[in-house]
Amino acid sequence: MSVSCPKCGQGNQDSARFCARCHFPLRFVCPACAHVQRQGGVCETCGVDFVKYGLAQVSQMKLQSERAIAGTKKRSEVVRTIILAIGTGGLSLLKYLRPRR
Image (cartoon, rainbow, N blue to C red; front, side):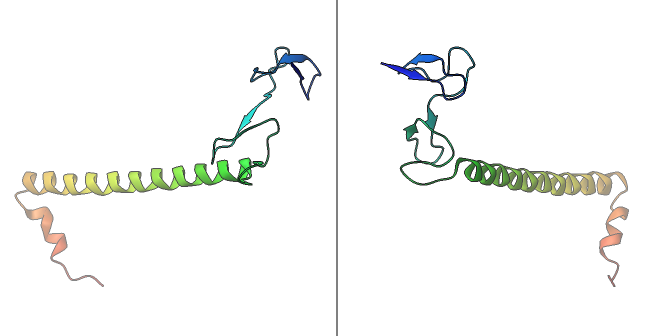
């Protein structure tokens, strides 16, 4: 059985994932439920929009990255304060005793 490419019209084997001529995807896998289908965009099974799902994943990864960076900055500040306190004999810790406005 042969499947024609929607982009260039090339005949491809039914098991092919990409067109042999233009490399256009012939099968799309839903990122949410892993359903394999012939057209992209919206999953035929669960109704997930591929683009919106991808953007949500990228947004979540960005948030996790920002949290990791903030945690690293906080830890490095603590280490810097400890090293500075040791180097100055504790005088650098006096700034924490001052009343804040």
